[in-house]
Length: 627
Image (cartoon, rainbow, N blue to C red; front, side, top):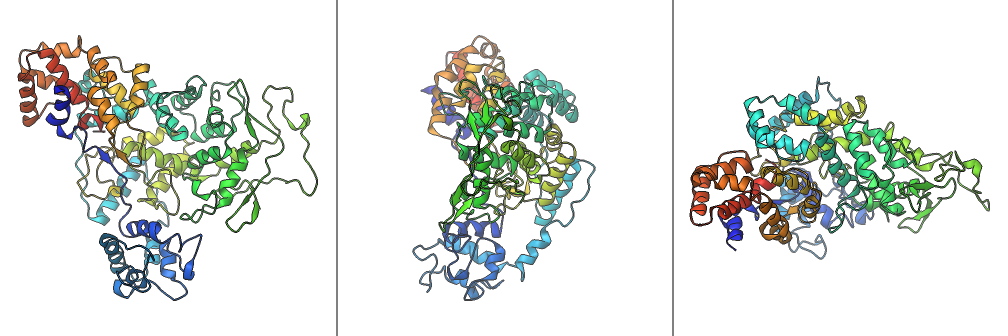
């Protein structure tokens, strides 16, 4: 009980404040958009336009409805949109609900500060020409700094070398640096050299695999954190792709095609489709964020109610791209038929439409559908090798889709760049990072365009993208000031370490080998996901940190090593300093030193007290979050 009290009382910031919540969106229209989406768009949007009024985009708001304009720029009281929100208004909107004072104030402020022609003003902010820069670091620095100046924001100061070192190890190696690694860097702080060293190390490929396994496949259920992904070769496929720095478009092509190839580059790629067990809608929903950068789930039964460019035809066309496939029993292969897979979908008007493979880019795959009473006939002549165990059709629909999605598709590059930016900086240039559509405007459109184009121009070089981001000034910033708009990137966003980062870092801090498979699996069942939209520490996690057998075993494993070494030091002050250096890579401040030394002094068993001190440091907010 004393240990638990220490964890949560001696260091009160150790858990309760660890809340990462999605911000409310950009200033101005972004906040109003959220209010209208929840309360108004159902009746005044893409699906239904009561009174001829649509409220899902600034342009449609300004267009008005059958009764004319609903917004008078600069005059909220004269604007029907705001007046109808007031108590007792007739007509009152929403009809059976009263918006809060804060919500009405947001709408009022938006209208009051609106320029005379908001649509034109918004268009003026869009980059007409993407400028040229010598490097990604220059592009990031220039375009982000311009945003700070426009908003009158002062960025946070850059972090010290020791903090930056800890950060870069966590992002590129998936763990904190050892005490020796940190000391060596601080003595000779060559940041570019360390970046290149870590990018070339085996740990980098593993870390990228951990991220992209989750992005592409999602977290597995607790109790089975690995499933068959490792044994099926999926992990090896991803790790080799990042180790060899294979072009991202080639990697995605292999994943979508799932050809029965035995080559080292492709072995395991089929698991992306295979794990989804012939559920073609799940496949379509997983593919869209990869090749389009946005989810399309909401377009299953109708055109997307918020993102106008996403149509129901895109959803079912993507389903059709894969519905000729079938898992092969006794293997990890996904076969594909040369015929069939022609299907229709029904829209809200009960109209039946053919599911043609149409990409979000506007490209449609040409294909001849059977007509009248004619029926397709399968035959050996339709396959490359009719005697193969897993036959490949001469015309592969999913391969045709893969080619269209990975060649001449600018959305593919944007999707990767935005996701990596979010993973390394804490928030996407478009946020959420897997919803690049009309509803989520990029905070820095020119920067996203430049990075995506640079990525594509340099052969989809994934390592180049990572290097550009981590060598930038933005990556080196300290924590942003409270209340600072997160989309300005004026400071590093607070983000929780992933379960994999924690599992390794706890062990490294205690002087144990970084990787231990069973321990990693146990941590994954309890600790944070990758890039959660909203992270709130759970009771389950509190239990895991404060008294789980897993954490107890970890500290016991260090009992004869680092804990015993610290306990053997001559006095409590020295023990505290050594514990902080070992776990945090820094010295304690005066208050921390005093409280920690007092805690040790109250206990007779020096070794047990030292273990509890180390335990508290390992489970504090400082350790659980990116520095």
